[in-house]
Length: 477
Ligand SMILES: Cc1ncc(COP(=O)(O)O)c(C=O)c1O
Image 1 (tube, protein in one colour):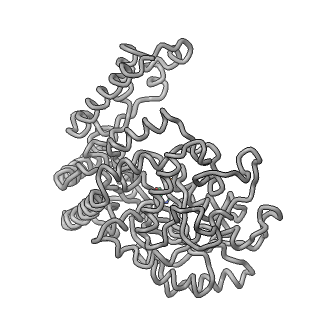
Image 2: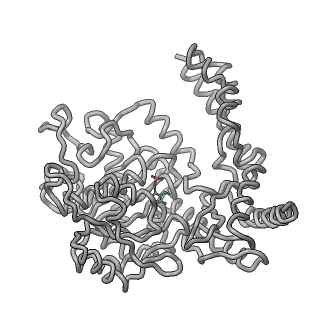
Image 3: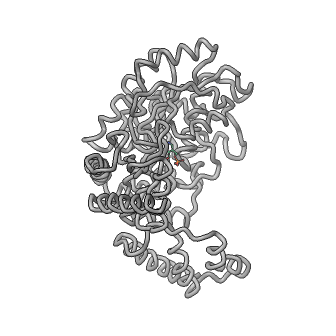
């Protein structure tokens, strides 16, 4: 097996790639046509004939890496994807090489134990009682928290709502879905909530929109009105969903007040913290999630703000029994009474084959420590605040909200179309990669400051470039 020599080729190429990216020698984004990439990389020939090893592998790496979007580039500011710490990437190699699909303990005791451990780390951050290590001594019927790692925040949101639905309608797996179920959520929720509503048979029309203020945050005083509307329609709420933080502008909903409302009315409280729950690591910013312990379930992606390579998302529940009850199917070859020294996650997840996702997150955590994660969050959140102060005072720019996280939206003077054209031009030039979003009916440019090597100088260079582009575009009109 040419494992060692091929691995060396790959690692050398990645090291060079990293240096070129972090020093901005190569563009953050390059968009070549699909047909050209398939042809240039000789995909057809390799997949017919094989032989991707040795010098041919080195050549492939030389051709492949320039087709990638470089997340390590300081101009990478677009989507909420972790700029991975290399330790997490090494863990990904270990996980895929050992390939221990650990949803049943016997298929990966180490990977399952690591998942159990990192879930407990997160549960402690919320302030929930972690799951016991002495499983055989603690009765299953006892209440403590629990969780599972899934392949993404969207799947996590779906799984949380499956658990919430099962809690409200325990025989749903046998009887099917009653027609009166609904979800309470703000319009600015991530689209995976609407998707989950569709998959669960509730449908988009079963989502009752919660009133929000000018920043998009839920107004707790208006919750009774939305709930009264839902009840007047003869519906039952499986859950109320709040954001920590919102995808478009990164604003946190007031969880403390929402939590009180939910417990008063016996409504399952789900917090989508896919992006912003990581602020729980930060002493400075964890107040943004005040009241999080009142939630019943929380979505928390490690592959967003915790430097962990895709994918690794956590679903966390205050009461483990609600998660274990979420799914009711049986596969006799997997689910059966057996003596084992560990824990099966398979009851808690949509997936059957499930990667040992915890290893990547654990490696990053073990490299940086909790303080390292907290310092990173503080740096990125503070950078967004400084970028806001800078842009708000710069002629020609406006921001819709002061950022609470590392997501910042802004707009250069001009119409919606101009914002999109500017982003197109930036993409063509390649030194900066941003996203755009529509917020309260207006189009904004949007940066998600994920990269620990992005600094204020990059923001200033970006602003200058945008102003130049605006001039060019208006001249050409
Ligand atoms: C608030 C929120 N929830 C859920 C998701 C979906 O997470 P994933 O991309 O891991 O499926 C996102 C992604 O941007 C998000 O911002």
